[in-house]
Amino acid sequence: MIEFKNLNKSFGDRQILKDLNIDIPQGKIVFVLGMSGTGKSVLLKNIVGLLKPDSGEIWVDGFPVHEMSEKQMSQVRKICGMVFQQPALFDFIDVYENVAYGLRRHERLREEQIQERVVESLALVGLKGIEKKWPHELSYGMKKRVSLARTVALKPKILLFDEPTTGLDPISTSRVNELILDLSRKLGTTSIVVSHDMKSALSVADHIIVLDKGRMLSQGSPTDMRNSSEHLIQEFLQEV
Ligand SMILES: Nc1ncnc2c1ncn2[C@@H]1O[C@H](COP(=O)(O)OP(=O)(O)OP(=O)(O)O)[C@@H](O)[C@H]1O
Ligand SMILES: [Mg+2]
Image 1 (cartoon, rainbow, N blue to C red):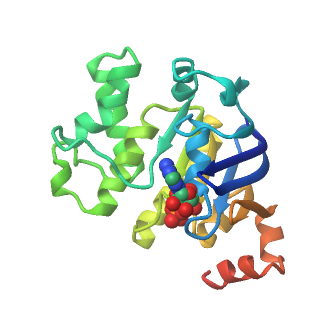
Image 2 (tube, rainbow, N blue to C red):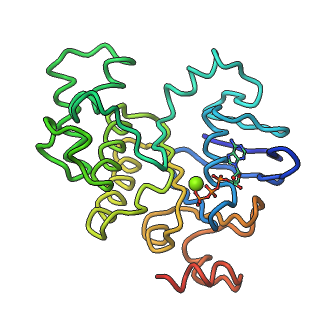
């Protein structure tokens, strides 16, 4: 569903992503772990064309993203939902309209259908009944979950999560993890989850990739990670 071939990305003379080769099958949940500044967000932004690679290939559901124009990229963005690291809600509309935003733009639905999706998506992130609240009335964790609901409401084939549980309490964290699992099981959604959270990765991921300074340090199943002797992976495991 998503494939990177010999992907390289630099900013000026700083090379951020170094010769990455990654293959993500449909319906799988892949966690990408790594220290701050290692290039995880840059990797996600390359998938939806917010950044372009210097060399290498990126294939998304058969589309050659590395050679597509900005205009052609709308086809890819339709199937890829991205939940950004920083929750970005529109502060001039309420929660209902924030979650409905993409549905109104991209799909032709009746208002009852929109309402159904909004209510359902908010319930999935554990925020039932907050439709009438305004973004400024919400905590950081709530904003984060509303922005998750907004993306999930579109039921994209591919979901890209940039640190979806950072800053959330343990209960909200498990709920978000359950949501990612549920979407994969029920809708066959393919997910990439960028995270620092080895505990979530071990309980949710089919496959874990560990990046170190933009390079692939290691990849494998949760069991492979538990048994890894790599120093960095050991450090991540100590947090669990
Ligand atoms: N648009 C940009 N222009 C220049 N440098 C950038 C740009 N985006 C990211 N970088 C640099 O690329 C490096 C990797 O950034 P990235 O945001 O991918 O890190 P990260 O792994 O997501 O870290 P964190 O865990 O803190 O979110 C950083 O050094 C960052 O400063
Ligand atoms: Mg980041």
